[in-house]
View 1 (cartoon, rainbow, N blue to C red):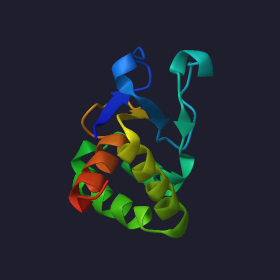
View 2: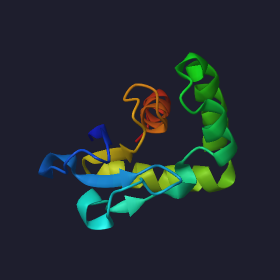
View 3: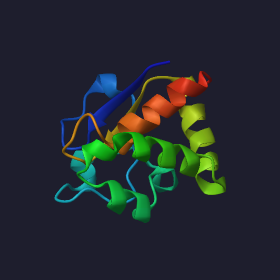
View 4: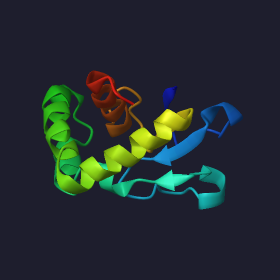
Length: 120
C-alpha cells in the first residue's frame, strides 16, 4: 500500500498508480485528458464553507485539520473514505489536488487523517 500526494498540474507518471482527485471543484485550466484522473471523489473534499474559510491561510492549518476531520466522518464523506480505502488496499494511489500550497492543502490533510486511523 502506497499513498502519495501530487498537484494535479504535475505530469502524470506510471508510478502514480490510481490517480484520485480529492477537490470539490475541477482544477482551472486543465483538460480531463491531460489531468489523467481515474476517479474524482468530490464527496471527500472539504465543504465549500470550510474551503473558503481556510483558503490561503496557513496560520489556520490546525483549525482546518480539526474541522476537516469532523467533515470526513459525516455520511457522504465517510462513504467516500471507505471507497478510497478500497482503492488503497488494491495498490498505489495518488491523491490529486489543485492548490498552490504544497504543504497546506486538503490532500495532505486527508493523507494525514488516513494515516492516523492506521487502517487502509
